[in-house]
Image (cartoon, rainbow, N blue to C red; front, side):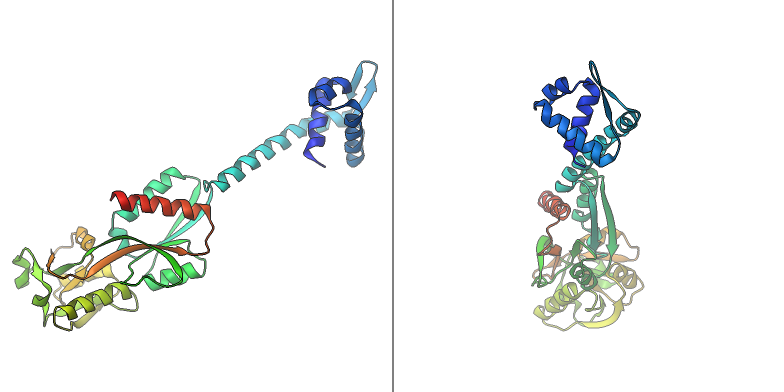
Length: 297
């Protein structure tokens, strides 16, 4: 059964006259009669009976007429839904992020703006470390991830650097350097360091190690933190000092002081990664929102 059969049926049902219905449809009467006959044959019952002044609906025709308009409504809804899907206005988006990435204003601003612009897109969020995020992205279990890359972006993905800036030093409040307005990295030589495992955050870990080596020393890692957001708390109990992305200072952890670094400082980068072969309009729309927020932040 084709939609044109239903349109022909509706025209005859409204006009109750094959000639007027044919004129309304812009076709000749014989083809219209033939199409109605084909429809009745397919259904298995007559829908119209001929009368002197034209035609009238049979009992089957009356029943059929009560249901046909809903078919057109559903088709129209389906068309509109398809158009929304083509514009990326419906669907699902799975976003991943590192714990430290969530402190960068680009991330919440992007998510909030996208949610408001596309309320019918189902948005899910997952927090993991960068290697896990990239693994899940590669397995197509996530669509876009906010990561902390090193100097070289991860291979095999489309990566956009959103933000980069010098890291800051975090020391216990009772530390002798806590009274300074800024520190040189060389002043941390001999201090015990609190760092995340390289397995969990290779980009930031390598930046800290390389930065210290440029300053003339190899840092002594005294404590491994389970995640970067735990570093300040471990520093607060005087297990060591550390370097973290500047926005982590917004956590306001009591018992620590965050200090800018003078001279050559390690760099913390924030990036958005997607699969190179992802053709999703939803993902493309989200990436556009993120890039826009990165430019205005």
